[in-house]
Every structure is written in C-alpha cells, then in structure tokens.
Amino acid sequence: MTPRRVAVGILAGLSVAALAAGCGQAGSSGTKKDTNVKGAGCAPVAGSQLVVLKDDKHLQNSDNIVPAVNAKVASPALIADLNKVSAALDTPKLIQLNKQADVDRVPPQKVAATFAKSAKLTDGVQKGSGSVTIGAANFSESKTLAYLYKTVLDAGGFSTSVRTIGNRELYEPALQKGEIQVVPEYAATLTEFLNQKANGKNAKPMASPDIDTTMKALTSLGDKDGLKFGEPSAAADENAFGVTKEFAEKNKVSTLSEFAAKCSGKATILGGPPECPDRAFCQQGLESKYGMKFGKFVQLDAGGSQSKNGLKTGKVSISLLLSSDAALAGS
Image (cartoon, rainbow, N blue to C red; front, side, top):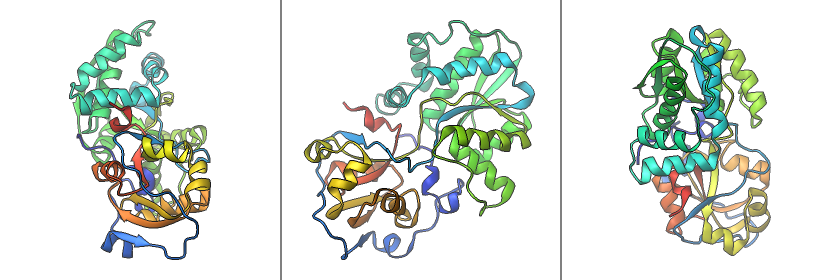
C-alpha cells in the first residue's frame, strides 16, 4: 500500500516531522502488561472487516482536509472552485476513493476524474485565469485530492498541473515561496507544523478537536507565512481507534464510550505504535478521556499494516487506525 501521512497526535511533542523514539518498556519489549487492571474486559475477536469506533468525546484533533493556497494567487474564484471539492467530500466518500487507489490500484488521476463526474464538481464553477501548480504529497490520497483540485480549476479556466513533491517539510516551503500554488492539507496537522515552525518544537498546541477553533488558529498562522485557506471538508484523515466488525457485533459497541463501559479490563489488548502508552492522543487519552483500562499493550505501528493485521488476526482488541484508511471500505 502507498505510504500514508503520519497522524499528528501520535508524535512526540506533536512534532509532524517524524515519529519519536520508543518509550521505555513498551518500545523495547513490544508488550506492556498492567497487572493492576480490574474487570474482565473484551478479548480480541479476529475478523476480515475493520470498523472505526466513534470518538464521541472528541479525543482527536480535527484533521479535516482543507485547500492551502499561496496568498498571491488566492483569488475569490480560485478559492470558490477549490471549495467545491471540500463540499463534495465526507469521510465515507474519501474511504471509497482510497479503496479505489490503494486496493483496486486505479491511478489517482482516474479516481479523481470518475468522482468529479459523478459528483458534478464542474457544474457552476467560477471563472478565473492564470497558471496554477498543485502540489501533492507522496501518497495516493493526497494525489487524488490534487487531481480533484485540478479538475475544478481547469473547468474554471485556470491552466493547471500536478506535481508530486513529497513530505510537508518539502512542499510547505515551496507553497510559501510560490513554487507551487495549491496543496491539499490536513487542518490540525498543518496547524501544529506552522505553530512549531513559528514558536519552536515545544510550542503550546493550537489545534483542537473543534474544526472552527483549529481553522481560526491555522488562518492566523498562515497569514504570517503568506498562506490562505479554503473551507475545510467534512472529510477527515485523522487518528481513530478501530476493532473488527465481528468484535463490534459480539460486544455491541459502536463508540469509544461504549467500548470503555463494556470492555475495560484484563482481557482487553490495545495495539499501537511504541510511543502510544505515553501519548495524550493514544493510550493516555483513552484512559483519561474515556476511563478505559487495558490488560496489555502490544507494540504495532501508527495505523499501518501491523495495526490492521493485529486486529484481523485477533492479536489485539482495539488498535490505532487512520479514519480514511481504505481498509475501512470493506469488501
């Protein structure tokens, strides 16, 4: 599968550059047992289909997709056309787009063209002009979004191209300098990237589970770097916690609150990256926000193949995923 972006909340100090080093016992041994946990808990249930439990108490930050634009080209027509993409997407639709690209192996350009036609994205676009280079990170979701932006801007009369650049450390400076003019971004992650760029690696976090609060902070930070933003989409690619469909049906859980009420205890096994036990958006947050207790933590990865396979094979009860992962689309 195409490498995906790193979820913001798992990173040490909310750094978006790279994963932190492992954290003590969990990172070195791969497992961490808690012998003081009370309650029976819910043992893992293997299965082929994964589902995300609703974050009903809003533990995670709002990583909604948002168009980021170099301020010098951010005309009302360009922003309005990009906003058509934001309005057309939600997370279930994004999951299906990712399934086409990551599982069915349809090129992102074709995925975008098919969706744009079915969603009638080019109807009623505003007219503009000028050359626009759209940057994309090096994973399929970002590329698909970039081609959706290209579709609406082409229909609006702009002359566009898509350039795959790589990670945020490369494309954000290019966007700021005007070497590229538009990038599909993630609200909370970019907020913390710009926050730490301006205020240091230990800066107080500015992103929030509330998208309006996050966008207010992002807009303020972007103004200092010559960046403007369109409307955030309902679609989000953010930290999430998932179980197998079979687990959810057996234990009758669909939210993290239900999981906490029914499944805290010795038999419950949490999976995640090595730093999960020490992170506010992972085990610490699940314990403090939801009151969950786990009998064991198993070291996997940050929402990747290890985490998904850990659920499917019955190694863990619940694990960190990303909310728009193609694996959530089902068969």
